[in-house]
Image (cartoon, rainbow, N blue to C red):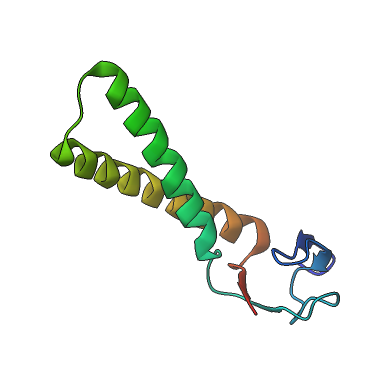
Length: 99
């Protein structure tokens, strides 16, 4: 684990995995989880894709709108869990960024 590098999500400088803080911007790096903003971006992208495909197929109403949001949330949750597992295998622990 020592010597492996990652990028700080705030200033995008290179940080050694296992360091307590970013040397450039001072962001605290802890082990715990992936930053939640990535989950929200994933949710927005999945919702847009599912909604776009659904609109091409037929007319969409409020019920369909909520159904698309639910499907996008489930899809993002599955990708989120998979990405945590990949990080665990790669870095032998989860990375969490806080400011």
